Image 1 (tube, helix red, strand yellow):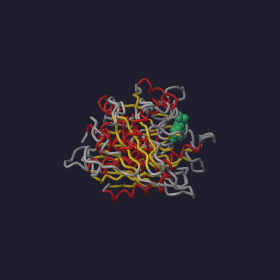
Image 2 (image 1 turned 45 degrees about the vertical axis):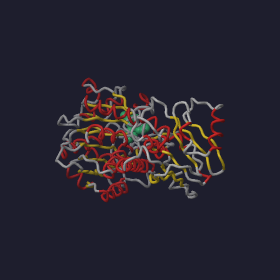
Image 3 (image 1 turned 45 degrees about the horizontal axis):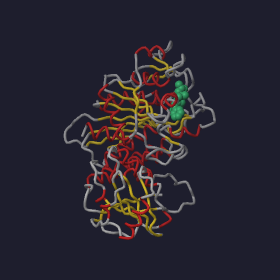
Image 4 (image 1 turned 120 degrees about the vertical axis):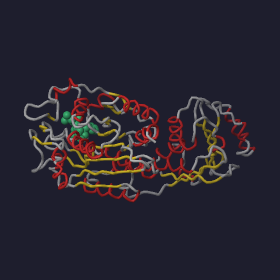
Length: 485
Ligand code: BES
Ligand code: MN
Ligand code: ZN
């Protein structure tokens, strides 16, 4: 069900539709008499005597059009808890009642700035669903109205919440689209359409990539009937010429494994192998929508990894954009090949302040961290710290994993400068990251986020209802907001 959030009314008096009121830890309702009728007040007081006050949400059905919700503000709440609470409230919305919801901001006295904004942000994020391919769908729309004179959310902050929701939803849409629809040709077009928000988009097609010498990226896509692309998205929101922050994403629209073919079971999951790029695209859309006062660039490599008569073979040797040669021992280790060229290109062309790449890069990171943390690999402690802190704040958690020169011997090749897999075995995520690091040529601060376990959630999480999570959009937005604006 989709929700529409309206911030408009100054009137916080009694309403005849569903009403959300905030109360303290103990569900003290003495301050609520202004907002409910006498009989409602007595009714709720009575029921509270036998309610479990440890809960953070209680509801009281008044009549067929009206339910009163009491949401308890615990004293140790963090912003992410408030968002989680909003998401939880989403589960209580009864669409069939066909009556509006009113959220009273006057009652939301709390230390946390924009408490109600965060509550509704969590609710909105949780409400996302991807149903465009269902032929039978009833348009379920619920409107939620914020009322009250106190704890107002500034227009600018409203816009920021909305931009972040739209950026996240855009990323989720891209990840949710199946491989037959969102192939590289279509993906490049969709990114190109973001021009209208003020992003400068450059699409490098195969011809241009060949000229540039991006053979690592091109090799991955050569078995596909679709094109291969590198797309850059620039946002220049800073008044000065400050260095850009760079975000680079793996955009493998479908990963069959190529000639090193994956097993059939769960191969369909590989439609989300472009999630890293989707996060970058969603982030850039968010930055443009909220007119962030920074310079940033997003770079994504878009390919489809297919077997076929023209596909890359195990044993092939390619020369990357960096000039370094790579022996392809396994065509299923393709993400690092795409990112290798994208990273070198980004560093050379934009000379960024830092580069953060995101990729559903290894199954091994799921073995290590499951679906709780993304793996963080970095050559820079300061950037790592900023990322870890941002992740904690928005509850898109990261866990730092090692890089070390001793892993290099595992990817050194007899026949070329390096090979794309480690045949000794072990440390699958680290050797992949160690591989990527070889393509950062000028010591630019760089971080790699392996999000293979985070991009998609079968059962849903705090702020998503299952499916594409949009992981990373809020994390990187927070990184920027807290450290670079
Ligand atoms: N896209 C996969 C990694 C992946 C696996 C993402 C599961 C999400 C869920 C990647 O391209 C891949 O195939 N990696 C191989 C590397 C191996 C061949 C060295 C893997 O993890 O098995
Ligand atoms: Mn693969
Ligand atoms: Zn892949």
